[in-house]
Image 1 (tube, rainbow, N blue to C red):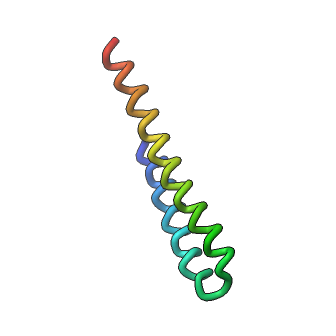
Image 2: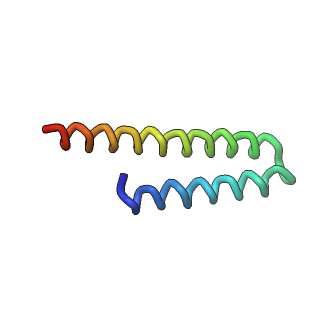
Image 3: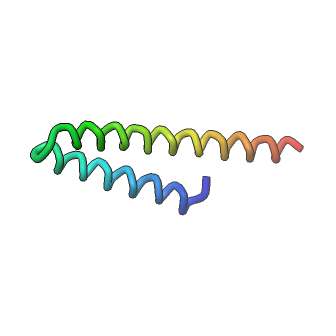
Length: 62
């Protein structure tokens, strides 16, 4: 995974976590939605990283 893509996932996850923290005191349902979105964002980051690693390992073996 490129450094720019890693930075994107890190920054977007921190922003979503911050928004979740703010929404906890305002609206619980939106906080739950943002928490689920944060988990999905982090999980998708791991999926992208694994695919990139698998693609790079396949090219190195050839």
